[in-house]
Amino acid sequence: MADPRPAHGTVLLTEAEVAARVADLARRIAPRIDDDTVAAVLLTGGIWFAADLTRALAREGRTVRFDALWLSSYGDDKTSRGRIEVRAPFQREMRGRRVLILDDVFDTGLSLAEAARLAGEAGASEVLTCVFARKPWPEPRAIAPDFVGWEAPARYLVGYGLDSAGALRGLPDIRALD
Image (cartoon, rainbow, N blue to C red; front, side, top):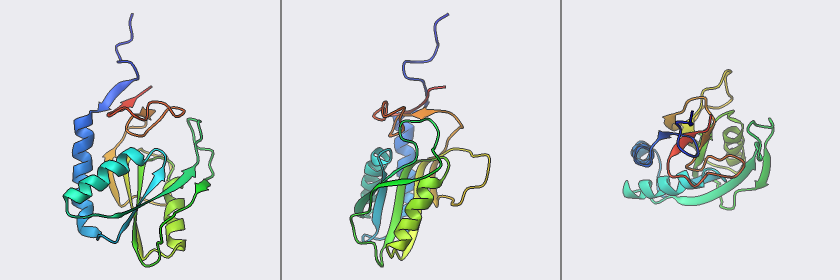
């Protein structure tokens, strides 16, 4: 019997549903930030989400500053190694500014917590966090995101920045491989 799933998994969120969730996030975030806010994406998975969200924020009248922080806890593995490696730090001045940390998925919470800590140490006046997808986790996490676009199932997800050993990030929708 043939596998009923399309190539590269089962679509959980279509491209249009992803766009609607990003637009909703921008509407919720815009009143909490200003144009001096630094939107800092966690590399590399968050790039797709950050690009769409910063454009959606501009449509809501907010033109944020942009930065990136490259953290790694997974490598090409399917599970976190339990520690964070900083591969490239923030480049923009954070002192006295509100910082909005952007990431694709909230799984263990380690990357988001480390990014928030680093922004605070850099002198941010306030640190807000936003993730496109939040996966369930069996135990409490050290940090909870301020903004969440989608409550994701506990499945192996790809697309829209989410990857499988670096592959399938560019899919415009979100799919489950399991």
